[in-house]
Length: 349
Image 1 (cartoon, rainbow, N blue to C red):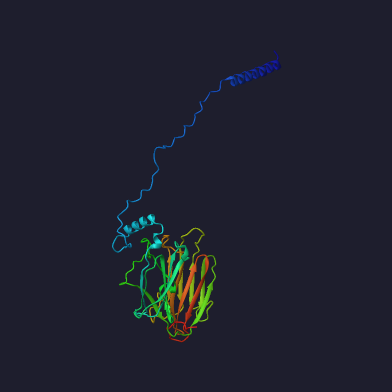
Image 2: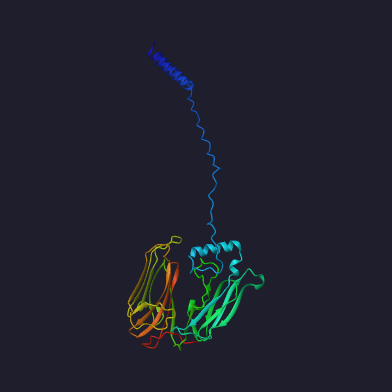
């Protein structure tokens, strides 16, 4: 055989071997894998009853008004629930007997004070949902309301020539039916509720100023000239409030508030009216840091009041500052323009 024939024969043999191998590979049986069926879902045990609330067993009702003085509050609340479940109008059927006394800033009785009562009577359609009554305190400052029925009595005491101390002159609520309420009241004529009034003085002309500080990226930094009521590079009061870590919806976050006087100082005002600045106790700096991120105590801003004193002009005044991470800061203050005068009650208009 020639060389060419040998090469041709070899090629034919290789092709035949490749074809035979491919034939047998395709003809080999494919292994069968048994499909695994998913386990059947577990059937809920319908024979197990759902847990149910079991009310406490009823307790003997002694009748009469509920009292947290003669029984534990928990027991009084349970009795209230029993009475309410028996009669859903129970709250509005409780007697409203109330006894009060009006005194001045020296705890002396104030006679002739106007007392306004308002209470709900929603279950009585003809009453319009609420009832009102008026009376005046007697010479001993005493007044009362009796033989009425309803829920949540509101009491407001006023007199011409006096400031209303309690809640800034707004009505004070009293609850008679539900002992769980924080303002639950038990009538006792020997221990009347004390309402405070403060006699108005002559007052004096004061300078009143308001300065609004812009909030840039939840950071406030400004200098206030307290005598002029304007911002400037050399103010007598430096104010800073840093809430730069504020993110909407990501409360709580830390913030820092700082006041610094270039002269004199500040002292926190805890009295309601701030009519007399103290003679001493002023500090040059006030710092408040909200680093306690406990949601129960944390707040995103503040509202603080301080007396201030400027030695260079011998000026006394008081200042109230409101700050919030998302709002601009507002500074409101008054001062007596007469040097050395600590009296800050405004003159009557």
